[in-house]
Image 1 (spheres, rainbow, N blue to C red):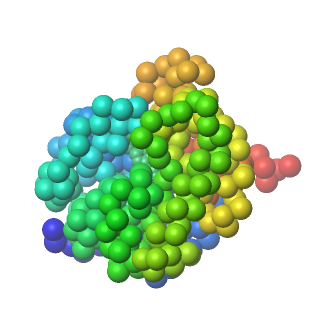
Image 2 (cartoon, rainbow, N blue to C red; image 1 turned 120 degrees about the vertical axis):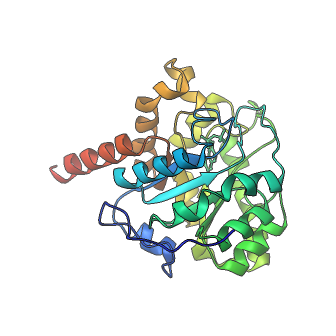
Length: 290
Ligand code: HH2
């Protein structure tokens, strides 16, 4: 993959250029929740599969999210299918889907994170302009991924995951133990602590009730002393509380993200950037008027 040249930063006027040193610190220093917009270049993602597989449509959607105020664009080419039924994608196919899209998206001027669990895909996309790695297996699936992250000196999102949900476990203890294992792997690979973000993995290897608990008790994860990311967008637990198909779960997504931020989340991952940005702005205005 070849790297495209960055054009002007995002249209919000506050966008952080992708190749900034201390990128994560700069994002966290915005003084408001950081909004990560989702771009799935996949045929089978649970909420928007097939919509942005075409490179031009993917780029148009990325542009729209930047205009709406996304601080980060999270690009993925393999559905992680939190609810099972994921079709494993070869690294060649993943790179083939990303190749016509990623350099142009990176050139929009906001940092791009690559949502992959594969070291080879991370390496190819970091060389093509991605600036953050987002691993839904918290560096525990492909052991080479930690090395790639360390070599590039980029921030990494370590997300909690399990092969299957177990309603009998204490989900917060499981998340904490998982994070400890991931942080050991990161340490051994030489990833600096100030490059790490932790994510409880809403919907992944959790019952709907456990996803609700992970947001409600997010504050307990502050003990790691690392920034927290929450991705509740359109997830199935919303449907169990208030039945709706994925594209009609925006209200539940926003409620979840507002409460996640109240409980310590610094970054939220969303399919619905405009609505999320609006919700945070209004919440901040009301808080400021107290
Ligand atoms: N959720 C999904 C994918 N990647 N990454 C992080 N860090 N946190 C999340 O909660 C998260 C994630 C699932 O959502 P989506 O990308 O829309 O679906 P799919 O994996 O089916 O493409």
